[in-house]
Length: 406
Image 1 (spheres, helix red, strand yellow):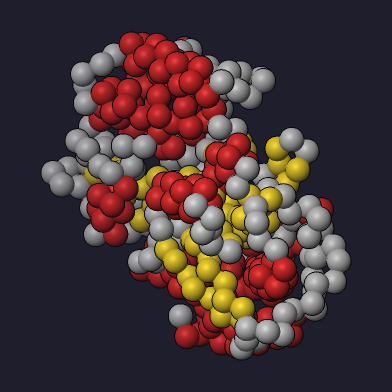
Image 2 (image 1 turned 30 degrees about the vertical axis):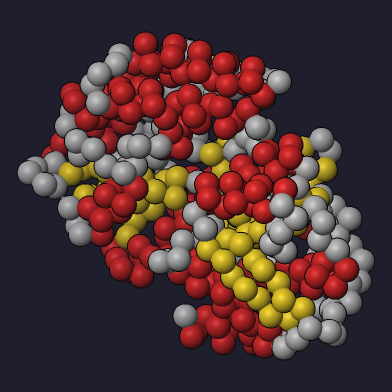
């Protein structure tokens, strides 16, 4: 990451004047320490990128230092809520969009509209007419990754996926791997089967549908009927099988692209998830991104320092550097049109998949849907519950959970 650090410093010094701020903010001259919580994984390039940005900003303003704290996604959500209630919240969050729902409900973050010109960014987290996060990157979506040493081209539809998957599955080698434990990996296929988790009002669960039954049946068939996926696989297992060359295809997110390209080079292929043959529709992964969120009580010099840092982290030069370093699509609109995306097959594949996606719901009711889907998906993939029974149970659990929120 030494190369990234030097690039970030140089570009930042050249471009800090390019600002997305609504009003001029003076960088504090006194000593300020910013505690930044991030859910970027400590073991990957993304966490190092967070550190390199904060180090670069400190190199420009030695009086402003950072304490970067890494937490996994759910731990960050829980710990931030606890710390906020105790009056000991961090100064800045680098996190995912679905945290905005519980955080706004609890009243522990503040809107960013007064500080930034949000028209310069891709669509952000908007609820109740207010914007609750500044986009760092866009996407955060699942896609199909493939090892070109094992499969020359990505399958175009699910029939081809199954046929090629069977050809490539033998012994400890699999045609396809994915995280079978989390409904985030189920949702794209639900879209491909013409379903969604909410009705048009955006808060009423629609889990007990033919689309959900067909989705669960499809995932069941991949395992039990066609045998192209492992008996079981969580995120780490799927990741390891792909890296070891024991899986030809992997469903994973844009956050993983930098590390996989570093290992596979031009042997890494990126494509949209294959069209569902039965419906003629492409799977629709959730899209969101990573966002800066501001704690409710942030003010004074710390607020000004944080605003200045966010300007720096999201200027054009650093957004281009993020493209190169992490292979993530930008949060700044102007960079989406950069030829660096069109000319890069990895980024172009990711951008094409994102075009089929749908925005991640940020409402608190979505947590009820996640919690309702996960155990039933597990039961179906264990062969101990039918897709129809699972869909009905999902709906009942989600509705009961939402009643408790009221």
